[in-house]
Image (cartoon, rainbow, N blue to C red; front, side, top):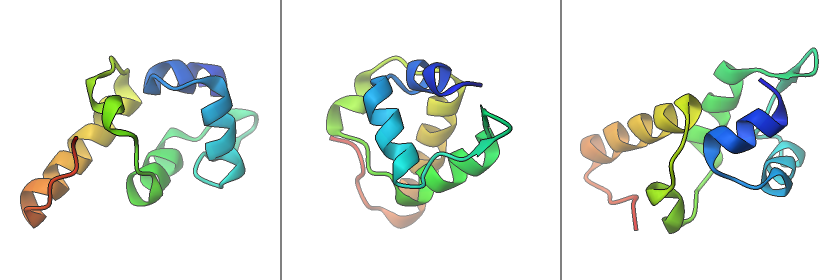
Length: 81
């Protein structure tokens, strides 16, 4: 997966994905996104905007949402806007 594909998958602009990469939240291996490492970092450290929850997303975005919803259920803390 390329950075452009990740941007489409997450429903984000390419500029936002570039910023997340600069922030160390997106991991590249051999020029491709390391999905496992990237999902882990985004799940732990990224706080998407309220509007993100209503955007169509691909597999990576759905995995992040699933993890956050599970965490929300365990903790009882609301994450969505």
